[in-house]
Every structure is written in structure tokens, then in C-alpha cells.
Image (tube, rainbow, N blue to C red; front, side, top):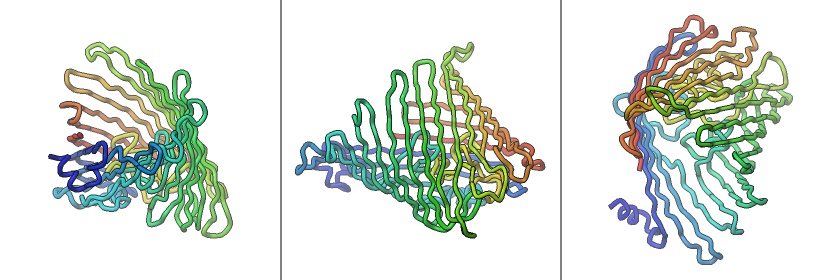
Length: 428
């Protein structure tokens, strides 16, 4: 029935080899208490709906080419707070919602693309249009529910077993267009996968940056990643250098000189009472500005790193939602930290413990700033999260989370922030 309806909506499917339909839905009901913002605290009950519906027509033959075919894909996404909590009052959620084309449940195109196989050469695949894309772990570049409009070439067997991607994107963010272009190379080693990349992020509009206001800027990111996955052990490490130049709003030029890295490891181990469990450890750090008045911005800060999921932050900590360089808003600054504070140090220790039909997860996080230009404290917060997951099958899961975020000496008068939520997620 679904295929018949899709064929009616997309008659081109009649000449296609295959029509794929996919859908994901997450319904979440929760309550945040005592979120910190500008020396005060606020609470936000929230019921959110996050759904995608995708149509991909595969295997359309291109008759005037030699063996080439294409896929045509459209993915619609709907994100909204639901009728029971349709007013977002906390700055943390207003900030997340403002990046979306629609945050009231009205669907928008997350992806709309054409993917051509054997494009020009047999080992080249080209994708044109709005597409999902994540570079490495997503430290510097991720679609964040919006996709990237542009083009990408995937080149297999570039040299022996190496693979390369070339990409050019023109995303829209904060009321202006950016230009992103670069390349990444993959090299499968004897045990793990190596990845190296370099790209430019160009902003030709006046804007606020972490350290100064700019008339235009070009940031350059160079990174390397190593990923290893074995039966008992997995490791994922990535390091990035940020360079570039900016024209300052008050005159003159400045340069960028930041860096960041993240090391993550997990291993499987038998634990009595629970059975075969997974333990994990992560440590990451990004650079910051130790003083003011310099023409060099040392605070690592890409614009399009992975940091959102629907109306909430996504990252380290259910409440903090930290990336390597910013976190849930506690002030009006770009990185969410008090004015003059930049860079993050993140430590995560966690475990996944199976119990009967449930999966119990526990995580402890510690957040510390890298630099404070005023010379004050660097201690941000600690957080612990408890999660229970009940998979009702491969395509449906029930989740419940309880998290406590404890402010440290950067927020001396603030209370603990707490989060409790339940969620249903399903896909086909």
C-alpha cells in the first residue's frame, strides 16, 4: 500500500529498479529544572516530536551514458514542541529552535538530492543537492538535521585502496550564507581506518566571533582521525588544527590559531550479575584565549560542528550537550560560557550494563574551561546521567533518562540543574 501511494506521488519510480521508504519518529516528554542563564535559573517542561520521512528512488538507468545510474532522494523532517508545550521560554531551547527553517512541526526538506554512480569515471560517485554529511566524528562539520546544499564527489580506488571525497557546500546559518569546500582521504590500515581532511569555511558577512567582531573571515581546518573496531576493543581518536584570517570590524586583520582533539575508547568485559558489558572512557580538549587584546584568536570554534538534535543540544551530557568547544547556553556568548571563557576540557567515564531485557547506562562527565581572560575560575561543572533503554524489537525502543548537572566555581550561586525524560523511538 505504501509503495503504491509512493508510486502515485513519484511516477518516475516506474522506470526505477527499487523504491525505498524510510521513517524515524522520536517522541520525548521531559522536564528541565534550574537551567543556568545569566546568573539566574529557569525551568522548561518540554514535549518534542522529531520525525523524518524519506523516499529514495534507486537504480534509475541513464541511457545515454555507459553503465551509469542514479538515485533520487527526498527526506522530509518535522521538528516541533507539540501542542502540550508549544511555547519555548528558556534561551537554551530558543537558541536550538532558531536554527531550523520550521520549529513548529511544519515539515521541511532535510535532503533533496541526485546521486549518480559511475559519474564521468567508473570509480566516481557524485551527489548534488541538499544532503546529509558528517566529516570524521563531526567535530568540525555536520548537517545537524539540516543537511548541506552543494555537491560531493566520492572517488574509490584513488591510489591502491585509498578513497577520497571532494565537497563544496553553501549552507545558510544565522541569517547569512557560508561557503565550505575541501577534501578528505581514507586509508584502511592493517587494523584500523585512517582519515585525513582539510577544508575552508568562508564567511563574507559581518558577524560576531568568539574573540572579536569581523567584517569577513576564512577559517581553515586540517584534521586526522584513526578508528579501530575489534571484538573486545574500539578506539576513535581525532585531532584538528584551525588556521585562517579575519578582517576585524574595528579595522585591521587578525588570524586564527586554534586546535582540538578527542580520544575515545571502549572495551567489552564480563561483569558479574550483569554479564557481558561495555565500559568506555573519553578525553577531549580545545584551545582557548588566555588574554584579551591580541590579534590572534586561539579559541577553536568551527561554525558547523555537530551539536544539536531536534530542539535540544546533542553531545557530552544529557543536560550540558557539550561539543569540544561549546555547550548548552549559560550566557549570551557564542560558546554558551561566561564572557571571556573559552575552550573546553571534557572527561567522560561510562558503562553499558545489560540486565534482563533492559540496557542500563551510567555516565559521569567533568567539564573544565581551557582559558579565562579575566583570570577567574576554570571549573565549569560535573554531570552524571542514568539511562534505561528497553528495546521492543530492532525498530522500536523505549528510553528513560535522569541527569544531574552540578555547577562548579564558575557559577558559585547556581543550583543543580536536573533533567528527567521518557522517550519512544521507532523506525522502519
